[in-house]
Image 1 (cartoon, rainbow, N blue to C red):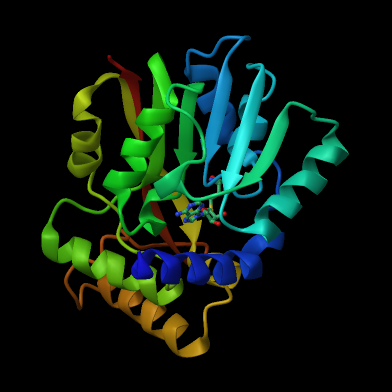
Image 2 (image 1 turned 180 degrees about the vertical axis):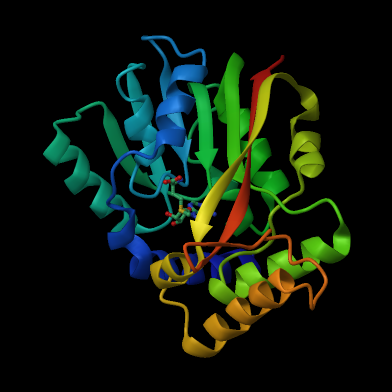
Length: 256
Ligand SMILES: C[S@@+](CC[C@H](N)C(=O)[O-])C[C@H]1O[C@@H](n2cnc3c(N)ncnc32)[C@H](O)[C@@H]1O
């Protein structure tokens, strides 16, 4: 419990700092997600660790109502302002934690989360909670960064992610994420690679200089074949250092 409280404090500090960066146009991956999920106009949705509500916004025209729950008030503040500007009225923000969702069993038709599991200390507990508040036959959807399968590379990958943002705990591998869904009926799953610019990525989190140079150095070393893989698959494009984030989506149907 103490560990969780400590992590919640770290999360709130980090994402209060990051919050202005989360007021952004809808990314294409979320437009595609909203088109791919079998959503119905009567659906009640819970977006867990919703941040500024980008996932909620993407789903908002397809469903009845979305509850956007998050640990960080500033992230939700950005979201409220953004939705007011856009005239979106079927999303309600609520403060809360993924590991103890403040809802009754079977309250939602769809329970979704993006880019949150790699911040959790207990992803298994959060997943259990997501399943509990989902109704039988409803959808549980997790979208997250994933670690490389090779344990050594995964270790390096997570170490570098933590250097950039200390609230990164560990990204699961695709197999580990899939394992969480074992008691659901998996309906769909896919992987996508997102190209990221290293400097922009480090600016987003305002990572301190010494950590920035360590990360950049390791990726550059891998590019020039001087080190073992980092799991970031670095590349050079127009003289800029880039890398590929691996993002998994798994859609499960809750079975009684
Ligand atoms: C990287 S942001 C992603 C926001 C949003 N899901 C999206 O995809 O745009 C991660 C969010 O998770 C929230 N968060 C992290 N751990 C949490 C927890 N245990 N319970 C609730 N929210 C949490 C943070 O406050 C932050 O807003």
